[in-house]
Image 1 (cartoon, rainbow, N blue to C red):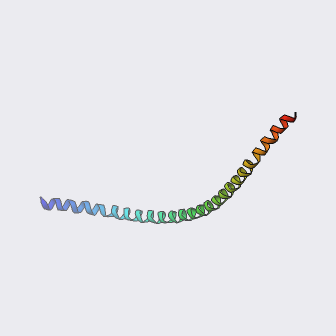
Image 2: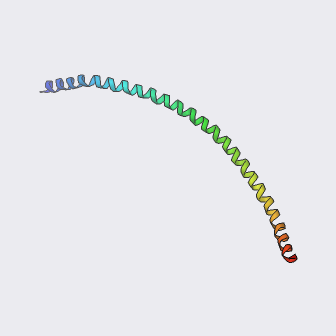
Length: 91
């Protein structure tokens, strides 16, 4: 009885060995593919990081210009309003 079970298990294990070897080979191939794709993704991420820094610098410059313009506009608006009021009194 026990010998029969052991024999059945040995047969099943023998049948599984090629499947296990194939799965191990497939896994190794996938690991190589993943490593290659990760390397490419890392390169892309590095390029994106550099471009992000360039874009952020441009955004910072644009914001500085915007703030400067808003400051000049804040100075000019009261003058414009006084000029418009003076023009209304003349006409």
